Image (cartoon, rainbow, N blue to C red; front, side, top):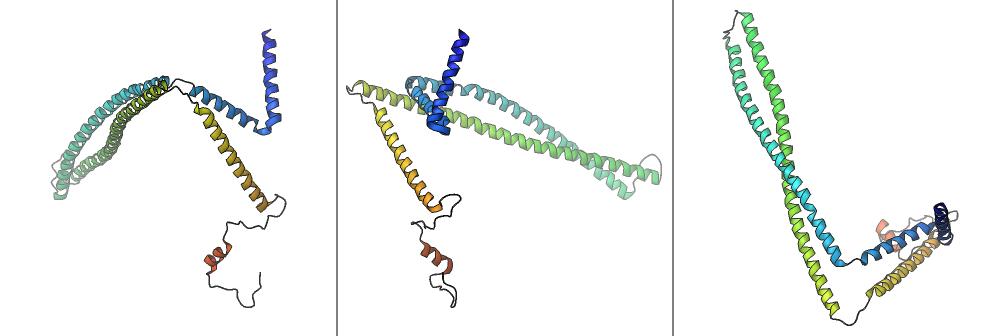
Length: 271
């Protein structure tokens, strides 16, 4: 029995789709979509405005978890930036000390003060090797320092953006609550006015009539414009119409292109 009902339902849907296709052709999906949108809008309009106000208040309250989570993330980012900043300070201090060592070794190499084990060229070579080792380590550490400084700059930019985002989110929440309060006040005023008025006019019919007339006006404009274009271009396989757009000032266009005082050359072929 269930199978029979399913078959009948599928058959009915197929017949309905076939009927729509026969009536509207390839535009059937568009008509179906339009009807669905109108039904959905009608259902939405039937919802109590006070319920929508409460829903909006709930949506605004749902901003709080994201706000709190971002505050936690911001706190962690600030602590990490401070640790990196202290690390950079330590590296800079070590580099200053190593720089002093390198300069002292350089002066010894230049002056020939070789106070190392051995004599002569061996002592000089050992001092130069020691200087080169310190210099290489200094350059390597300097590269690491620059990378950490760039990371710190990026972290600071991210932290500043997060602060602005939190401030903006808080301001937006306050604005939304104020707007919602204004909406609720207007709704109460409308309800009070409707309650004291014995007449009850339904403006939905008037609005629908206005919309229908506007759609018809637009449709007629499209038809008129299509007829104009049809006369101008003709069929795809035929020649285009030689009718000039009545809104086009051809003389003015020629004057602007060649100058109002220009004339055809003597002996030239006339058009």
